[in-house]
Image (cartoon, rainbow, N blue to C red):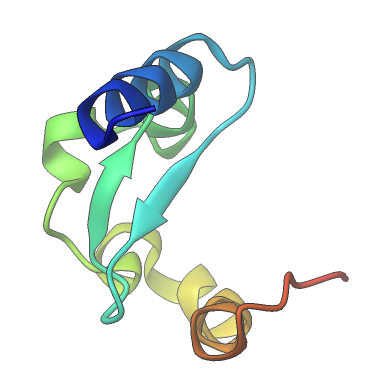
Length: 80
């Protein structure tokens, strides 16, 4: 499957998934977030994009950010 088709498919899955989904860059800036998760944060999808995890989640971020960095650094999923 060509990259553009894959990107379209991923976007479609994110749009219809009944769970919150997003992805970040290595500095934990939101690059994509689905509507479901944006509603949980009570701000629009557009307001998330380019903001850091800390900017959006405030005081909750320090407890979660290290786990996300671990996944980015190692590629190993986090299991609580």
